[in-house]
Length: 70
Image 1 (cartoon, one colour):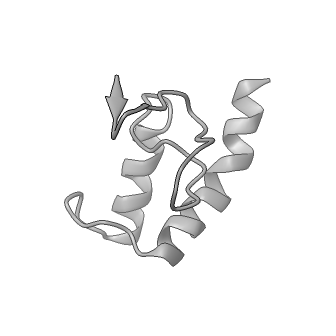
Image 2 (cartoon, rainbow, N blue to C red):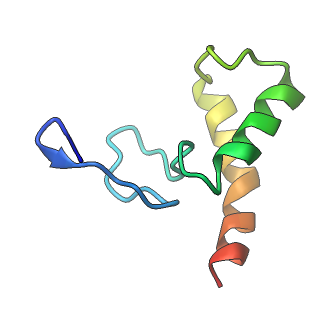
């Protein structure tokens, strides 16, 4: 799968995201956690996160994902 001429990243962690995001929120291991975060923050599923909300989510989920990877 390609996006803008580059292979799309399909893993849990992103390595070449131009916006600096570290977590692939569409990965099957991450999506349920992301959906719970949206529900907890009362953010509609169609609404994109602000930069601070995305940082908050990634800071919360990264340690959990690193534990799952081991």
